[in-house]
Image (cartoon, rainbow, N blue to C red; front, side):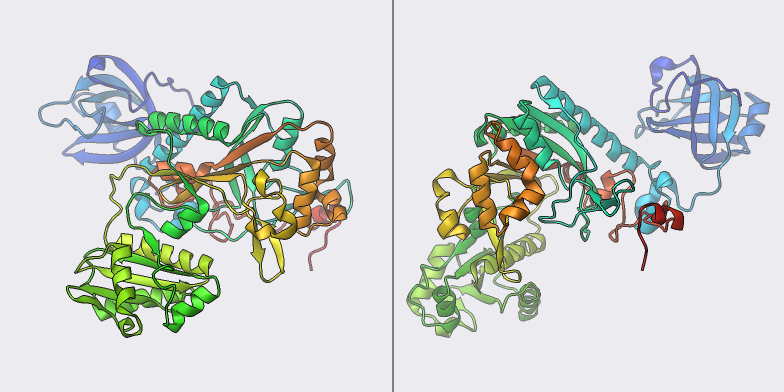
Length: 588
C-alpha cells in the first residue's frame, strides 16, 4: 500500500509548525465524534497529536475518518493549525495545535484490544503478559523502556570515555555448579555432554585480565535456573566490569563516577560522592540487613552489655550461646494496643523468632509483661542505651546472632511502613557495604560455601585463618546498595594459584574436583595473572528502581512470569520427538 512517509512524529508538532503541510503515521488512540466533527488522537512512541476530520473542510476524508477505530494504523496528511478558542490541552506537548486532515490512508485495521492500551496498569498482569505487544504500546511501558535504553547509552559512553573495552563472552560454557542451578544445553555433536548458560561471565572476565585487557566491560545476559520473585528472572542483564592492577578504592571511584552520570542523565539528579560506606557487621547490627534502606533513621541497638549479668533466662541463654540481644525504638508508639502488638509478635514469629518482647516507656519507667524479670539497673540501661522517652515503644529480640538481627531488620522495615517513614520524595540512599564474611556455613551439608563466589580474595592479613578458623575470615568484597536493594556486587579476586587452591580446600572442593571445574582458570593463573577485581550490576533491578517500579518485569520488554513461563509465546514448550532423538534425549 502506497503512502507518504511521515514528516513528523506524533510528539513533535508545536506552534511554530502552524500552516505547514505534514504527514503523520501512527495508531488511533481515541476517537471522538462531536456533532459531525471527528477528533482522533493519533499516537506513536513519541507522543500524541490531535487530528480533525471536519465535513465542511474535506467531506471525503470525513467519511474515511468515521470508519476509524481504536488501534487502527493510519497515515494522515494535513495542515497544522492553532487549536481554536479554549480547546488547547496544556497536558500535551502538542496541545496547542492540531491537524486538519486532507488525506487519510488506512494502513491496517485492528481487532478490539483485550484491554484499553493506556489503562493496562489496571489489568491483571497475566493478561498484560499474554498480550505484551499491546501492553508495550502503553505510555508507561514505553517510558520505562525508553529510560532503559537511555541508561544503556550512558553506561557505554561512560566506559568508552574511560578506555574500557567492550568484549563479548560465550553463552555456551562449561557447567561449574557452585551456587544457583545452571541451565543446561545438550550437545548434538558431543553425545551425552552439555553446555551451561552462564550465571555470570566471571571466569571469562578473569581470563581477559590474564590476557592483558586491563579494562573490560559488557552489558550481558546471564541465566540462573532458580525460583523467581519480583526482582528475579531466569534470564537477566548485568553490567559486568573488571579491571587489572587495582584495589578496592579504584573500583569504588570508577563505579561512583558511573552512578553520578546515570543519575544526572536519567533522573537529572546531582548525586553527591563519595558514597557512604558501612562494614557488613556494623550494617547487620544497626539495620539487620546487608542491604539496609537508609532513607529513614530507624536503627537497631545491641543490648548485650546492658544484660551481661542478666538472670532472665531468655537473655542469659542468648549470651551463653554467643548470641545477641537487639533492641529497636519506635518513637511515639507507646499507645499501640495489645492487638497491634500481637500482630507484630505474630509477624516476627512467622519469620522464625521465638517471640517479641515489647515495652511501653512511661513517666515512671517501663511497662511490660517481662519487666518483673529485670533489675532496675537493666531497665534504666535499656532506656539510656536506646535513648527512649515517655510515649515510646521498645522492641527486643534475642537469640542466635544472624537470625535475630535479620528478623529485627525485617521488623524495622515493617515499622517504617506503619510509621510512613519512607517519603516519596526522599533522596536516593546509596551505600557501599564492605568487609563481608568470606564463607558461610551450611548446616545441612556440613560445609562452607563462598558468600560471593570461590574467586573472591580473603583479606590478606587473614589468610592464615583459612586453615584454622575459616568462618572468621572476611573478604575483600563489597556491595552497592540503593534504597534497600543490592544493585551491584563485586570483589578483589584471587590471582594466585596457591591462594586459590587454599580457598578450594576451605570450601571442601578436592583437587580433582577443582581441576575438573576450574582447571582452565588455574592453569591460566600460572602464566602471570595480574592483581584484578571488579563488580557486576543487576541492570534490571537498577532500571526498576530508576523507574520507581516494584517489579523488574516492568522494565523488561518480554519477561517471564514467577513460574518462569512466557504467556505470550507459550514457552517453555514441547519439542518434536525428532529433535530429542538428535540430542540423544528421552523424556520419561
